[in-house]
Length: 268
Ligand SMILES: [Zn+2]
Image 1 (cartoon, protein in one colour):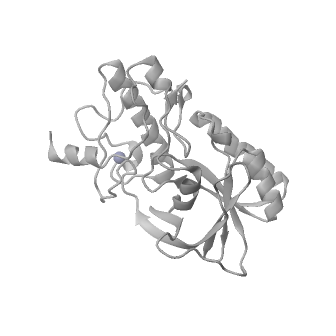
Image 2: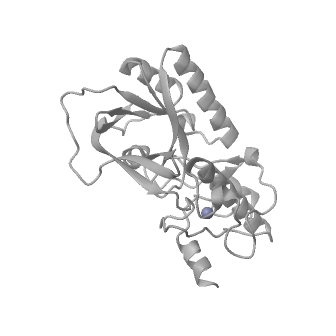
Image 3: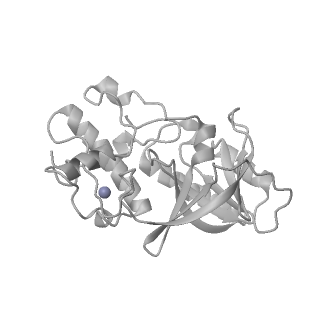
């Protein structure tokens, strides 16, 4: 195999594809996420695109947990409506949930700042997160709980606070220093973030196992490219490395439940 393709395979994001996509039973068996929901909230990154670069906001993990006594700036809340109560769902369903959340927040008088992409550092899953201001913490926690979310994040001054809503037991309120970094739009399907390097397709056109693996890979790529951009793949218009081109057949997004902080991709 070509060295570049080999490296692209080694750097592939772990997109939590079902373990045995070659059988109907295997395709609906959901792989658990790498860590607990509490860990996912502590370690997640929030990314928005700024003039051709990624602005990545995350909590500092290498320092002691912060305990600020007072906040001075505006509190920005960060809340997703995806995967309520941990249930698997299709991309279109989750996108519709964001619209419902936006409508509800607006009707309550919130000021919507932006919608950004929340991922683990390895980008094994993604959810859209609404950033807004103008509501008190009781209201925001109530809205989050009604949308089946075990936690939300408060962004105050230079701190990020994960606030549990009471839906799961193991999440504690934790405040960390916030870091914002501007990064190049590397291919989001590679964990090594080498500038200019492209992704290689997983799966292929022959055999049920390969076709289903390729469909999940393509779905994940589409999800990441639309939210995180990709200079090397020119936003997805450039073919991927290898002999198979950029996509394998039509991918029916409605048939696949996407990966989340709770588990991996599955078929319906
Ligand atoms: Zn790529």
